[in-house]
Image (cartoon, rainbow, N blue to C red):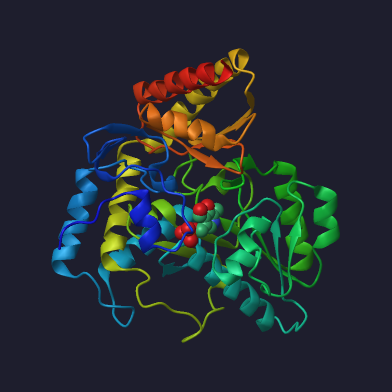
Length: 399
Ligand SMILES: Cc1ncc(COP(=O)(O)O)c(C=O)c1O
């Protein structure tokens, strides 16, 4: 069969219309660069939406995948699988937590965490303890449970009825936190850094009060580390920047080195919540994805990529602040490691399209936020290239 043309028109014919894809057909990648079918090289400041921590073509990752793929691609959770055991042990070692469940995607990790929350509450004997709270402006995924915890109407409109007994606390609002949590609260889901929401960091005061209220009302704190986890903020988990220990942690995106993999990690008190048959998945913890995840974690440590995330993140922030002194279109800059949000004066997609014309891939989120989530291995020169292009397009837009 002749290959179909990779155009936006053919895409419309073939697929449901739920993605707004950029008009480039990618063939491969090298380091922090993606290459399209006409040979054009693009500097990748998106990393597959915060997935490709090691960039493209990392030999250690490719070797781990090919080695495991040649041995065993899939067997299911009916069996004992070495890569799963190794990755689970590594995650428990890093987190100091107690038990792991592997899933395939971020939203599935959130579903498992919702089930853990409700089941634990049910086991406490309180039939009215079912409420799951999240924070305004948050994003937790698109399956029904995760969507029910997600703030923005654009993700939920038209999908009623959502999961009952869910609610929202205003982000970083201590008074609202005090007013909303109660004995009925089974769990509060948080992102330390809201990614899809435009890179907003939770305040220490809010987190510490949340932890105090957890002690009073016996609810769980579930940290959604799906975007911020695996080193992107300079520590392996973003909650580690604060004096707080979550009860449940959700990881996905970079965890499988680009293959679909997610993990739910629970503290000691969660250890016996799920019993046989309570939860499961055919593919979750796929051995190739787990082998890739292990190689990814080893490479992050060996190459000191968390330090690099701190270094390049600070450099980008400094350079963006300098741009803001010359370009009034920049309204605000928020940075946490290599999660960077630039609030601009108009729809961010205008700037995304202009950057694309100059072979730099950036992303728009929350309407007017340009988001940068580059691979953790980005170099100073590559970060500087991104700044130069942003400078050029902001200059052109002001004319
Ligand atoms: C914080 C957060 N939670 C959950 C999700 C959902 O993950 P997935 O798209 O893998 O289902 C995302 C995806 O962007 C996310 O950023």
